[in-house]
Image 1: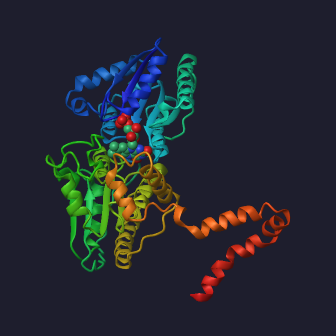
Image 2: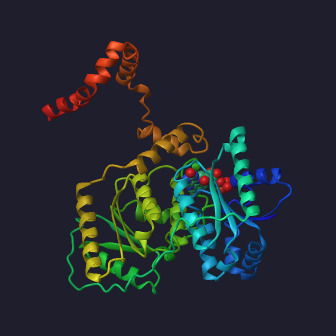
Length: 460
Ligand SMILES: Cc1cc2nc3c(=O)[nH]c(=O)nc-3n(C[C@H](O)[C@H](O)[C@H](O)COP(=O)(O)O)c2cc1C
């Protein structure tokens, strides 16, 4: 059986994910594995159409395609995404149609599900037969049980190819039916009170709705608004995954491009950030993805904490709850406030006008009041995961994170909460006594639970 492996790591064969592939390869010597270092070679694939075509021909002749990639900022690496864009740009979809496929990732399980959902959507768009996704923790290969699981999964994939097993589509094709947005002439503006507003976009001239929405929202701010187009930022390349930033948040590209400087001097100093982009496949563009990837020089430190972040999006976001969740998770984990997301999906332009006006008004109001809404599971779960990783296995090489987490109280385990500790010990013993247990669980639980709140309310 010929299996084509599309490697999504910027590190090429020196990648953790590829060690998992090597393990599968070692156990299935009867199959031929052809590995392409897609993310690492993207420059070549973009400039050399023949090199791209050769991969497509291998895909066409393969029995199975394995999308093997590391998680990068809740998704895939920007360069892997660029490859997905090239498939449609170069009309190569037919090679993927009907192919049996599987998704294998390595990560620390931070939003691995959003990356899997995205790739599943891409497989469905390409009319592939997806067997299943497999999310390996980056240390799993050292564990025998996990290795066993991985082999069971691999066997299942090979069996599915053998049987020509059917696969049921999960994601419907996207319907793109936005109409042209014509902004109204009425213009209310809101005083930013000197607060810095920055609109970041990747808009191109032909993206009429996006460009007009940016113009409209910019005009709603009475003070100065800076519009920065990512096409004009000096970005030499994608994140290399080198972890040079781990010690003190210094990116390896620092001497070569202007990304860190742009991020630190123009974005971190803003009060209100508006991120504006158009949907490309099931996410924003690969350039936007590169923005988020390269932002990793801040490692696991929330770099936009306390800021208002609004999104202006052209495209069918209502059909992409996964992308909405990525945006919510990103802003919550950043400890920023997601003001809202306005798209051009409304039927008439007036509705979009009103939404943009409201977005600008709320951005200013919230900035004035320094309002940050409480995080949901998306932000809280993510923060706890990082807290545990940085406290434990990832303290090295992420020394900067450890220093930050220590000084900012991120290590909020209850290890010093003596009141809770004593209460837990005492009550764990007491509830072993049947009469006490009956009294607590049968009668007192509900009233005792609200008692402290009542005491507090009486004081307030
Ligand atoms: C820039 C960057 C972003 C990352 N983003 C995520 C993420 O969003 N979620 C996650 O679970 N792991 C994330 N990781 C961890 C990698 O997915 C993990 O280390 C993976 O095993 C690396 O595989 P590779 O060596 O094949 O590239 C990130 C790592 C880097 C360097």
